[in-house]
Image (cartoon, rainbow, N blue to C red; front, side, top):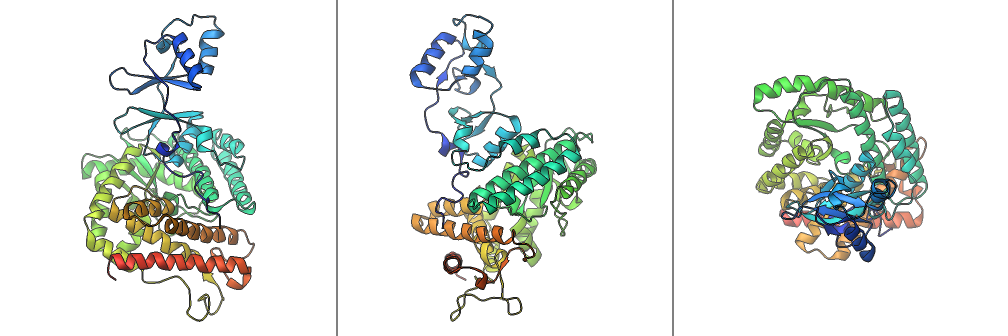
Length: 473
């Protein structure tokens, strides 16, 4: 198995900051700033406010050439007159995926990183975010950025599908392939939202497009339907009803555009165009609270989908507020977490005592999604809720939980390898013409693959044993 699978594009921005940023004050002369940039080997200088340390602007070599050298201006003026104001920044805690998406969306080369108080913490470059990149996808990203209508969107989606298949066929590790698929799909969703937004007069209130399920976890495969919703701000129930009526045609149009792109409409209706999932922040909280209070089988099913939340477009602070509230509410509801654990442990990995694998008697196959990756996904979600972890990806949740609970690093690495190996098999099976997606007959695998699959399922069973012990089930 590839021990590095999925690690190259994951993580937080704080972990990617390699060096102390060059911070200068607004009144510093351009000559002085350039001298410091040269002496320190810095590609940019960040202009910060004197008292707060918050970024005000950024200066790069290109800025100097375009705004000073070519016009023939002096180098003795203050840097504030030459810098690029309105810096685009993200928190140290922001995910690398969010940064990559923002870079592609804004066509930027670098992002300023700030700490919890908004002070400058560092600068992250495209090369930092794509250090382990192998697939040449810049041309496809530019294609998506140039989309103006539905025809262009559908054409770009077809290219994305072909490139995603090529990643799998080329042997790209499942973690990295999945993250690239998620990035390209995110950009397609944002392009669809842009098209629909231009067709409707939306209410002038904060709103956010939400991704749930595998899309929320950045674990989409080559065959995935829609699981999305919309959240907005409303003063009361009456205003929420009025705003919902305004948002629903827009959301339905986005769902239709995505369906045309090859993301089928969700058979369970979990889409923003459904009034059930186009809700105000207060309504979303009430809906989640009801699920945690009742904990019926349907509520637990909803928990496996909706509790994996990620913002895709709009005001991401709404998604953050909902997730933060959810983590606090779930951590305080031990009974609900126990019900979730019981539900997750109803079925175990398909391993037999006599035979290596337990397969369906008629087809001779086992389900790599239901019996393979799902035990990891379910356990990781429960740990994240119980420990108040903001991570949404399965690997991120397992690593964060392991750090809090002081699991051995080798065990955490083994869990990651096992999960990503099964995910790799799923992707590969989805590329076999006529084969049932997510299913495999062990006899179709070579000896090494069977051994890896057996060990991966054993890791899933060990993870379930940890969950069983935690909740004394």
